[in-house]
Length: 396
Ligand code: DAV
Image (cartoon, rainbow, N blue to C red):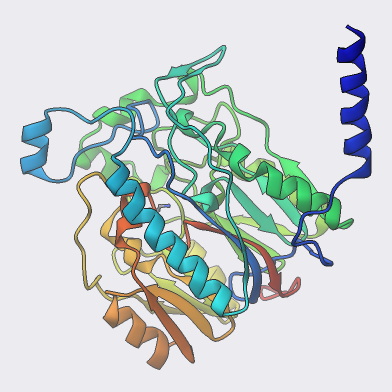
């Protein structure tokens, strides 16, 4: 046991010396807005992706009726290597484009998502993938906030960026690092009967903003949030409840950050704000023509001088057979500076709109459709760790 004990001592010694990561040169965590000049960001990886298991927060469906007939039921286990490679190729290309624009990029750790989870309150047969980093973590000013998550298969997804968090936290003495309380994800956290509601039932309930999760425990995915400096906006959804919004409000109030809710009643199964209400810059939002913001919320933005520009219909509205997202992934663009934005290459109409109506000087098209079935597009698959911006007050 002596050897064992000395092993422990060595580990402590190494930890105390704290190795700096190779990218450490005055790194900072900082992002107050959706539009500040991007300096550093994380881009997801598709490695070891699995199909999300059927669970109370998600009853997935095959979109292609022919394929649905052939397969019979939702597939289980790993996605094909071909599908993983195709997504990784586009993610790697995004990394090259960002580096070309002077943005430092980091990648999540490759983990084995085919492992089942057994916790005191639930089990799942496999986990998912670390592609949509945006859902698991957000930078709000100088604070990194790990989301609670809402799906069981994504419970430990945050661990894929823990090394990045550890490095940043050591290198930036001003950084705050918070993790929202881990939910139990027990059955009572979910509103199972929601899945039996008809379209008509959901329409009738639209102004109650009740979805497949209950309000038992604070819940949110980080992608339910959008940032405008001193103010952040959070959408109650399939992945975020009012308790989650209240948790954010209490945590951030001492820093002078105001947390608001934002409602989109016509989205009957909303998840994440970044295909619905995309903040482009100070006082300018790209809005979804099929998901207008609730009148009361709209009034608040308008009173403060904000302008809404409706996005056109997607040029390519097709959804990959296993995608659980809508055609509006077209709107999931990535603003990387006050006048610079990355857009999926097939979305020509949106590229024109951003150039001619929204004042972007540089619109960079990139292929990204092979990433769609992993739950997101350009905004979803990134996490901005550092932007050159500050705590602007645009809702005085
Ligand atoms: O419109 O399906 C998808 C967002 C994924 N992060 C939608 C939202």
